[in-house]
Image (cartoon, rainbow, N blue to C red; front, side, top):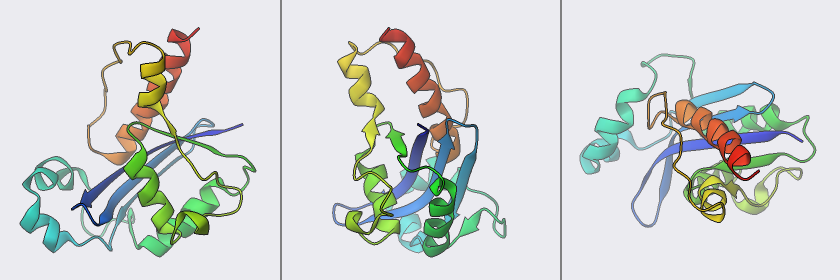
Amino acid sequence: MLHYYLDTEFYEDGKTIDLISIGIVCSDGREYYRASRDADYDRILRESPWLVANVLSHLPPAGSSLWASRATIASELFDFVVGDPKPHFWGYYADYDWVVLCQLFGTMMGLPKHFPKFCMDLKQLSVSLGSPRHPKQEGTEHNALEDARWNRDLHAFLLREGG
């Protein structure tokens, strides 16, 4: 069984969750990262100084092959997971991350058949273990790939803590 550690960066306004970037680290060592060309960056620049300072500043340079459309991201994500009949997705405070991932395929019901309809949450696991102090993140916070790597490391830590 493979674990896929997920993180996304997104803009949300209470009605919309707009993907900015996605990072996934698989327990077999593979990694996936893309920034969305389709996000409404004009709106983000106007309405979210926090995202501008903390997320947009960590995106790949313009013209990088790491930028892709939502349709391409969905296709590549399918290919990233395709050989795994029972993938397990994990995220930290993962509710919105999971919605953003599902929306790449239209709706949750549009997910590929072998994808689960839920994401395991590392924060919930941590609370169930008594909320141990988490290891410090070594990479850049709010970079989806760096955050996904930290999720992988946090999961390993929590499994050790839980015995």
